Image 1 (cartoon, helix red, strand yellow):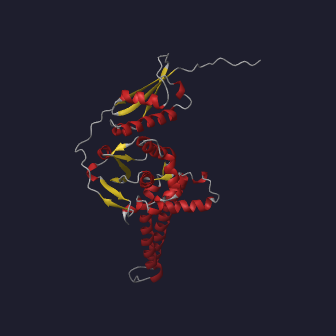
Image 2 (cartoon, one colour):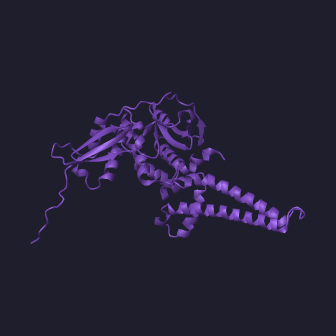
Image 3 (cartoon, one colour):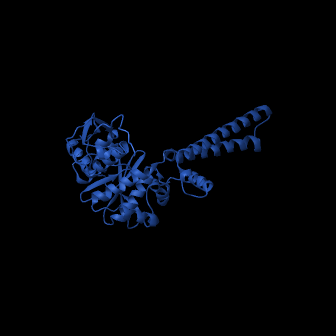
Amino acid sequence: MDKDIGYHPTLKELKDKEVMRLAKKLKGNSDKETLTNILEWQDKNIYFWTERWPLAPWSLIISFGFLFIFCVWAVFTIFHPINPAIYSTADIYLIRNLVILTFGMFLSAFIGIVMLLIWNTHIFNLEDKNKVVTLFRFVWYSLQPSLPVEKVIKYKLGVCRDYAKLTACLLLNLYVKNEIYFAFSPGHVAAGIRIKSKIYMLDQHLPIWSLEHWGSSYNKKKTEYKLMNFKDGKPHPLKQPQLASHKIKISVNTAELSKDAMKVLNLKQSNGRISYKERIPLMKKTSERYEDDDIIKYSFSRALRNKIYNELPGKVNAIKRINVRLEKGAIVLYAYLPRTPKHPRPLYFK
């Protein structure tokens, strides 16, 4: 099976009505807004389908196991080619029972994987009327190397190749003349786009990467790149860009990030009394994405905003100051707030 099937969108998917509608909705006033909108929408709306990632190869292994066990069972129970002088009837029944037991173990493992898949998805919360049909449909989708892009949008589930396919579809609808890229590292794929002289990678979660930093973070020696030629709808090999031969040294402008976080939250720094601070760490490798680049810095500010809203619901407007620090290579955000009284004054109504 061609590995391109897993991430490469078809011409039909590129012209899908839902894809075109979503692309139009995510279009911003500038490149930095558009790219950040695409990645932010995926970050907020699509859940990583954890069980589907290993299920497709496991299903092949189990299928071959079923086939092997069936052949052995057929030999011992149907054709009986064994010489009775060598093997007694008891031996034949023993071997047959062992085969049946092994078959049962394989079947139990398969059912267990499917049930785990179903249990950890949100299919029972979907609006589909026929839940049974949806259940069997999800089992079928989970065995496929590629999920149709309209299903990714509908069910809000996917793995890296589904993210990459959806990203490519959205980018190709919004940037007809730009080059679309797919980047590969062992067990992972992401989509990106060339804006002017720089390639930006949109990899599931904010913020946005540059191609060089993406390749440096992953195993650059095994990283591959392909360019989407949308005239014939097929990706073609592209000469690999020259990446840094060593780990890129990260220099994060924490002072600028602090100002950007306040700005994107529409807050003004206050010198009023501050009683306590909230420590909000970002994902460990987020700092590896930082560059002195308008698109990347804007996506960082949006990532900080979303993190603050998730960690401090209902308290954002009370923030007096934000301080971004780099601690042991990880970005940590400190939000300073006034303390809420433990015993608020009771309300009296006349």
